[in-house]
Amino acid sequence: MKLTNRKEPINMKKILAVAAFLMTVNLHAQQNAIGLRAGESSGITFKHYTGLNAYEFIISAWPNDLTITGLYERYKPLGADPGFSFYYGAGAHVAFNTYRRVYYYDDYRNRWWYHQRSGFGIGINGIVGFEYAFREIPLALSLDIKPFVEYNTDGHMYWSPDPGLGIKIKF
Picture 1: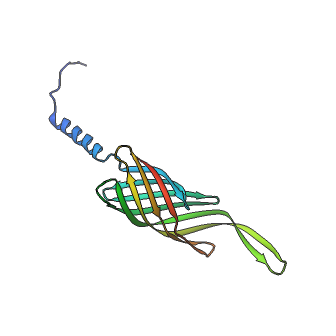
Picture 2: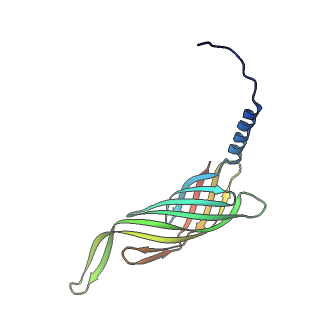
């Protein structure tokens, strides 16, 4: 095997391709955000921004309930500050309930009874709110209302206005 110490000529196509890739990465900076949502359905939120649209996923836990929500959101900038936006959208969720206590009163025996059961629910969601994304630091604050209607395997339908406050780190 023969080793040579030959210098390759500079390939401008490779340099331009690397520069274009780095510019694309820089243009797509802060397209994602992860944080917390405090409210009726408190939990961890992940948001992916695509221009003036976003996809948001929320995993929320209640004492005996785990809910996974997916939302599609549209953003409208407000005022002169590009960081302040109004958003609205819709989506769906699935809920997993474990050991839900169902109480009922027995008139014949004059006492309360309960039994425990697991359940599953599906629902539709809406969302409307305001978000402020700081320009100096990768932080976004939001205030929203996320109403939902859910049908559960218990045969019951639930609804809630579900207001919330969010804080997210953008990356």
